[in-house]
Image (cartoon, rainbow, N blue to C red; front, side):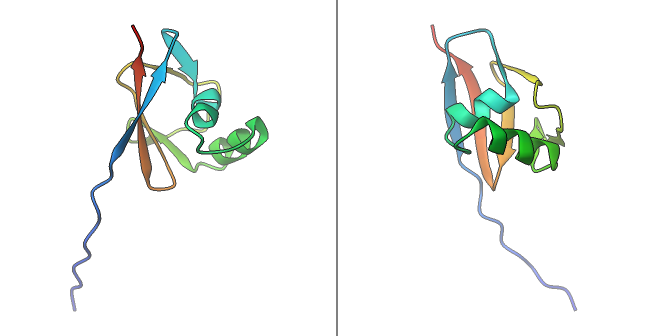
Length: 82
């Protein structure tokens, strides 16, 4: 028996940064996806965050404009402010 599952299309939240790069843990905090740096460290190390479609366990991963990260069924796109 086959079951079809409808998956809601994920809406991207824009995360505007002032610098050319931002660390993944800082991006999670800036996006209000987590409330503390400790929580950011934990969710990243547990493999709960994807960057550009791949699991990422490096909390120091540098994100640049155009990068997309996902956490808890929410997509965030990094954009640099001008």
